[in-house]
Picture 1 (tube, rainbow, N blue to C red):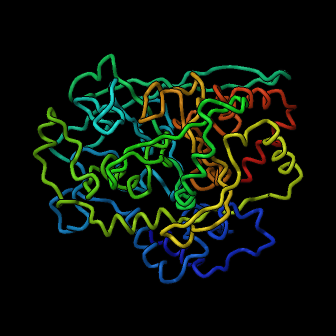
Picture 2: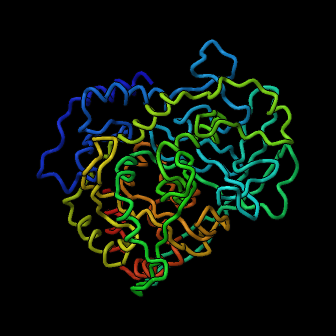
Picture 3: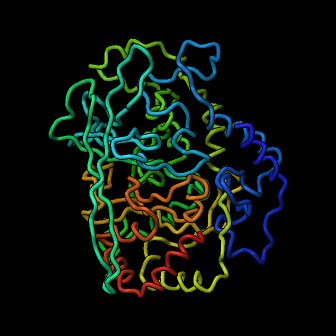
Length: 454
């Protein structure tokens, strides 16, 4: 961690990029030209010296390994009783993207499984499993049983482009093992999720709500085959539904709530937003465990962590002037990809001055889209149905192999690179996928090269 702080400190005073480089600055004035394994870890280039201190305290919180209570480190105890990981960075390594287990049957190191049963909870969200809650927690403190584990098996699906070029996709199959409180039951709904990268989140939070809603077309009135919808999860700060922006199904309305939910679900830590651990009635040892205070994460810690997640810089594009990349950008638009992966937004007012009123290029509309049966998890999440997913931002896509050492994409990491991710697109994206498949091999490679430049 010390090396990480040093790497970040070396660029604290780097000036924002020159105006003529604007096309490369996907994150507007927040963008950083420092590339390499630390590319996702840097503070916004336009962050003032006064706010950098809080950013780096948030960085410390993001990387802190929480410990079991009671402990001499009273500010950082309370882990569990059941949990998935001991820190935020355990899943979001170098603020980057998680992956599926490297070997079939291996442990999920940066991935988790959401659980529910048919029905809705008191806030209109997924109904938790009566024994296991809404997230399978595969670790626990001493004396408390872990809930169980999910095991992945991959099945190859062979296909070919119209020009005869063969490809192989891989489809995950899941089973559950070592379940401490009985079988999940025939009516279980589950959804595996890898940890997404953390860059540019404050910019997405700063998009005016009215503009996101204006892009929705749930009845496809314009007849383009694209019918994006908003999700409206419960906002625990205001006690009413709100526009969803974050999470694979846009099931979180704000970064503060997203972070508090991750503390609670991933590490078993309470906050003022989520003051109870997920110990259900059958989990007797869990319910008897000592806590680390009420709440275990102070509001000031949650505030500084939220500032950190709001102001992580977006790395600049690479190879933007390459003729093949430019050709790929044109093909990306012609294939219809920008109907969901909207290139450009302008932020409104925001509590983080670094992101307010920036023009930036995330390639997302933040809306839910039907992605077809092939990607369906069958698990509703507030207004999102079992075939819908939020359009993920594409910025930073080409840096994932550099930062995290893999190229796994989509919600469960099944796609090994952008090409396979496109081939999994269905539903509203089926026409765009077929246009991609109909391209020549050289044009397909150009489109992928464009995506890797982001």
